[in-house]
Amino acid sequence: MIKQMVVVLVKELKCIIRDKKTFIFGIVLPFLWVPVMLLIIDFSMKSSQSQISDNVNIGISSKDNSFYTFCSAQKNITIIDVNDPKSSKIAAYVTLDADIDSKILGGEDFNLNVDYNDSSINSMMSIPIVSYYEGIYRSIINDYRSRFKNKEGLNKFVAIEIPYTLDEQVPNINTSSLYFNMLVPMMLILYCCIGSASTANDLSAGEKERGTLESLLSTGADRTGIIIGKLLATTAMGATSGLCTVLGLCGYLLISSGSQKIHLSVLEMVSLLVIILFTSMFFASVNLAVGVYSRSYKEAQTYLTPMSIICLIPAYFTYTLDASGIGIGYLCVPVLNIICIIKEIFANAVNIYHVSIVVFWLILYVLSAFYITNNMFKKESVVFRI
Image (tube, rainbow, N blue to C red; front, side, top):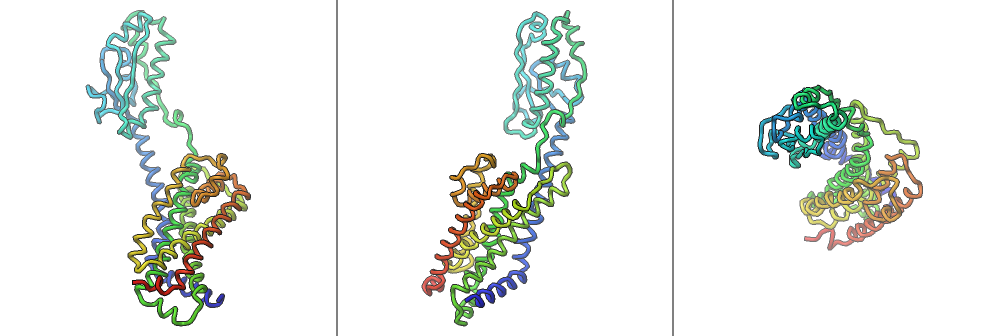
């Protein structure tokens, strides 16, 4: 049986390598798409931040007051004459008392409210800048109110330009940590599933349509050996897609400027490879079971397409979960446990006990799916059902 398994494995791997479509979508696409996507996101974000820091359009409810004078003195703030707080022309609308200067000179409290457009990304990104200048204005009024003799003196006192540097106001976010903690688990799960899905379909339902499955079974080879060979070939494709996804993200970190590098120890690298291998085998066994059951390649695709979406749902549950907050319960839920252990690995908090638990469950999942697949593959009524 082992010899037959090896023969089937080599045969299927040769077919996969010769298939340009499988090679492109399973290897090249995850390797190139991830860094390209992240570079585009970074470029878009930096471009938007640069534009906003250079100029922010705001509206003010009244003109003849010290706040209007203060904003007019700032080079990166442009006052637009609008009456609609939700106008697309402005990032923020400031509503203040009509007699605000009289209240300031009289030592009274004043109202100054800033409204942002929740549906505008530019408006949301302008919040730090507008809030910064609002705070400066309030500080000037509170700290120097005793020096204001009249309205003219007040306006002269606030008519000063105060530079704003975005980098000094926005906290320095560890981009690499953000991407690896949020995107790596999601992309790794997705491509381990997608990478093995097309291969599993082709090696099972696809062979039914081409009529090559009958020829393979007529050789008298043990069906368990055949299905193991197909499982290993499918696993190899899924694992390769998963590794290419991680390598693509590493490539992004190398070519992007200002990103901190991720450092993994030998133990963490070995743990990652083991998790990728068993994750790929898990999805390969499930995809192969669906392919064996399906009448055609198209039917198998119909069953497997929702799976790539469903398998991402656990990623959203752990989107904000810290590696330090992962309990044993998380490690016993399918797919969720894979995401949690990947988070631990890239947070440099790998726990061998946790890795062992996840690997145990993955092996159990693989054996269960393989048992079902092997039993179906031995039944003519399932393999050649009409």
